[in-house]
Structures are given as structure tokens and as C-alpha cells.
Image (cartoon, rainbow over all chains, first blue to last red; front, side, top):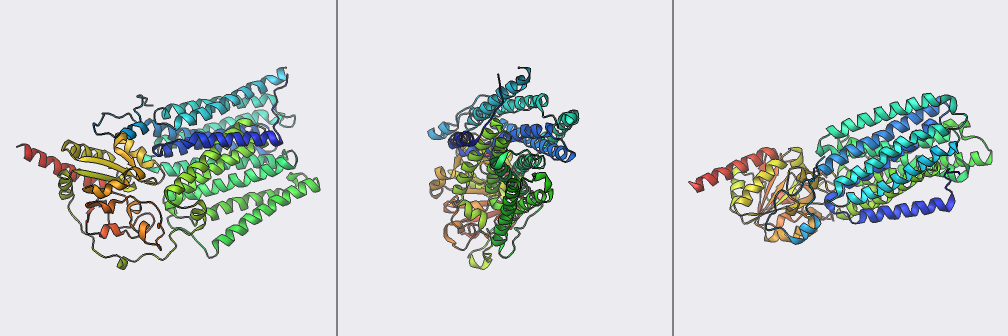
Length: 120
Length: 483
């Protein structure tokens, strides 16, 4: 059996189109209160570029390619690790509501429902 | 069969990673599940990185002699890049978050550009489509790298003045055109003369150099107040570059993750631009703040400083208070003290709400994060459109460390650089207190007419210190009343 992946022409365009649509829909419902963590979280997700960097570096044959590949992995790893660290810290700060103010607005509660205690 | 096992494992883990990224992002878009969302995405990243070392079993003949060195280099790069970023990300203050996001984003763009460079130098791009896509990804990635670095420098205060030259847009346009021409030339020569790309490394260097310079030129003229939007655009750019390089490397996980982030970043950018009532083109190409600076003489009235304690007592006897927190509050680390003051007021029967402007802080939603950090319940935090009509019927608006987002010039002053931006109507409240460090201007460098209004008093001082005095004054009052 052969598991090599080959993507060309229209297949690539389909992947791009569906990916873009998914991204648009996923972010579409985010409340303003989460804009910063989400920007940081999506910043983390494109840290996957480090995998491409590893692939390029492992296949490097000249010292120039090795040098540039090294930079690719270095920067990609920085993107992924830093993105995770700051996003995780920020989201851990969204602590649960300590008490229930009696004058709370119904729709405000709906937007920010009480969440489970989950502190990293 | 043996040969295909690494491919199978990599294929499965990458598929899982792509799923976990989308599922994680989806969880991150609701406060209930947000913090598990990043964990989910993190697991996806970890397995994908570990599995990628299986590529070592499947490298080309030419790369085999270098394999051990390459694996060593990859491990060192992962440890150093990941370690330094992890450490800085754990240590950085919440207030400096936007510039860190800019920095990490620039790294991602740089990584995508570097991958493109390896492909070009190694002449690995297969055919016209791949070559063109590699070059476009390289251009976008390099622009994202240098642009993000400029954004970081501006937010960090290394660069604090917008830098402009005459005919900036013409220069930028020519820069982009030159870069595209060189890219086109590389494609043309490679295909027509079947010259390996490697035979013209000077052109590749020139292409990357011009791309980087273009990113710098594009970002330098944009004012500091617009940086959040710029970071968001570059976040989308990096996603796009990663997706394109994913196509070149034939890696669907990179393609999907890149495109998801590209689209998400674009949507976030549009939401932010909408909050500022400006178009993306306007932000990128209009010289923000370049119009003649408003003179103090245009505004009637005087600044009326009052004691913090007096302001605190006044609010104690008000029936409703809306607090407008801004970046100055965060700089002074006054959120805890503010919430203490709020609890005192609530105890005295005052109705207290927070009004958060979409671009309060240096990044949309940053103020929500900072208030959450201090323990302020979500129920008290209101967004602009939900609360703006309430100012007119509110006794006191307490503006702390915010400036541009309450500047009435945005409503009336056509010549003002912030004209048209939706603002919080703090000036409509019966009484306005503005807590400010001094008489300085806001991030946009515009004089604020609100401060000179008849209903407005200024409380000068560090936000945390001022709030401390307010708390003390109200407490003293409480004991007296009880006695």
C-alpha cells in the first residue's frame, strides 16, 4: 500500500476553500471578550509551520539549506511555544464569577455563562 | 511495506492535528470551554511535531549522508526556539501581550519564508505552479516577518513616531512591483531556460531582501493606535504563507491550519476595523494622525483638577457609576484596587458597570482579559453598543487611563484623525471624573475636549495610587457614618 500524499491543482484549491470557510465560521461566533485570546490562539495554530521546517531541514543537502532550515525550525518552534504559553496564560485568567450579583442582566449572563473551575 | 509505515503514521497524526486545531479553535470561541481549547490544539501540535521526525526514515538519497547532522540541528533548533519563546511567554506581563503576539507571529512568517528559501535554494519546487506558490508564500511570509517586527518595536516603544516620507505610497507601490518583477523573472528564467533556480542565488537574495524591506515600508507609516489591526492582518498573512508553503511541501495539515488561521485572521481584522469605523485600506494607506494637530486654542474651558478623595466620596453618594477603563489603568496595575473600590461602592448601594471599548488596551479584548485577571465578574462588563445609551442617565462616568476612546472629537471634528471612530459617550454623563497621570495626550496624539468640559474634573496621579486614595476616603466615611 502507498500512503504518499499528492495534492495538486483543484484538490489544493478545495482544501484551501474548505479550510478558509471553516476558519471564518469557527471565529464568526466569538464574543468580543475573547478576541485577544483567540487572536493569540490562532497565532499558535500557524506555529504548525515548524513541521514544514523540520521536513525541509531533514531533507537539506547543502550547508546553506541546513542553515536556512535551522532558522525555519527555530522560528517555527518559537511561534508554537510562545503562542501556546501566552494563550494558555490568558485563558487561565478567565476565572469563574465569584458571586452572583443580583442585578445581573439576563443577556449578559447568556454571553458569559459561568464556566467550570479550570485553572492551569 | 516497511517503506510506507512512516508515511502512514505521519498521515494519521497530521490528520489528527488538523482536526484538533479546528476543534480547539472552536472551543476557544466560547468562554465556557476556552481554556480547554488551547490544550486540545496544543496536543495536536505536539503529536504533529513528534511524528514529523519520522520524515527522517524517508529522506531522499542526496540528503542521507547529512541526516544525523540534520536531526541534531532540528532538535537544537526546537529546544532553543521553543525554550526561549516558552520562557518569554510565561514571563511577559499581561500588558505587553500584544507585542509578544506580534513577535511570535513574525517568527511564524519568518519560518514560512525560510522554508520557501530552502525549497528555492535546493531547487525542489516541482513545476511552474509550485514555483509560483513558493514565491508568493515567501513574499507574504517575509512581509509578515519584517512587518510584525516593526509592529513589535512600535508597541514596545522602541519606535514611537510614525515614520513617513513624501510619496510613501508610491515608494511602497514601486517596492512591491520590483519584488513581483524579480519573482516573475525567476519563474520565467527557470521555466524557459531550464536554469536551476540555484544558479541565481543573487536573485533569490534580492527577492527576499526586497520583500523584507517592503514589509518595513508598509508598516512604518502606520500609527501606534492602529497596531492591533496591523498585527491581526499579519496574523492572517502568516496563516496564508503557511498554507501556501504547506501546498509546496504537500502537507495538508499545514494547508488546513494555515488557511483556517488566514480566514479567521481576516475576519478578526474586519471586526476590529468595524469597531474603529474604518476600512482596512484606510488603516493601511491613510497617514493616521498626519492631519494638522488640533491646537489647545480650539477647545473652550479649562482643566479642573480635584482631589482623589473628594471624587471618591462624590461617587459614594451617586446612584449610578459607569467605569471606562483604559490602558493607563493596566500600566499602573490598578485593576485590583479598582475592583476593591467597585465593591465598596456596590456595598453602599451604588449601581456600578464597566464600559469596555472594543479597542481598549492595545488589542481588541485585552481590557476584558485584564479585568478578568483582577476578578471582575463578567456580568459587570459591558461592550460599547450595549451601554452607550446609558451614559446620559448615569450620575458619574469614571474614566481611568482611557483617552482616545472617550474623545468627543471622534463625533464632531472632521479634521481629527480619530473622526468616525465609535466612542463611549462618557461626556454625556452628569459628572465625569478622569483619572490621568498628567496632561499628556492619548495614543493618537489628539487633544481631548472632554477633559475641558464643564461637567468634567481631572484627578491627576498614578491610577493605582488614586484608586487607593478613593478607597481610603470612602472607607473613612463608612466608619464615621457607623459611629
